[in-house]
Image 1 (tube, rainbow, N blue to C red):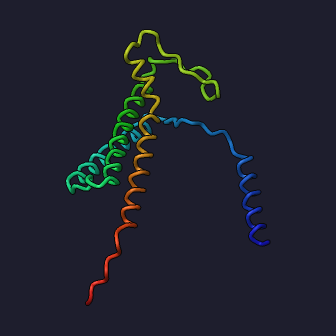
Image 2 (image 1 turned 90 degrees about the vertical axis):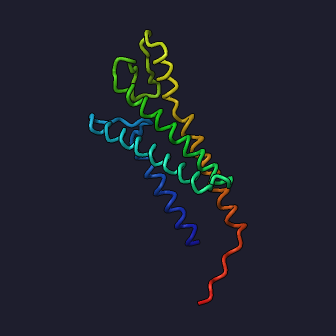
Image 3 (image 1 turned 180 degrees about the vertical axis):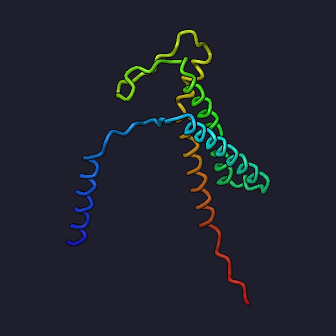
Length: 162
């Protein structure tokens, strides 16, 4: 009975907490140029980090195992996602590419300038960065799951005699 009461208290508290939640946006706005610059530097740092990870996975020949190979593919998708994010952040900052209509609402839209051509197509598909980030997350999960399965099959090491 006590467990049930404790669970009910947690449930009621969570419901109350969620009922007073404010508006949450799906995009992040960078207040000033220094915030955007720091954000762009973070993307570059992430690209370099994933590049180093791929380098060492290949150097140590870990990619011969399927789990590490999936982690490598995940890192590659993270690199592509970060490059995409850098390009889109740059295009967002230009200001002459589009007009935002009903910003901050469920019916918000972006009206591209009609004379953009290829740049408009790049911007449009670049905004769909989930097409790169979702495979990265799925591949990372699958790779780590495979590494865990491989580790469970390996017998434990015997302690060395002193």
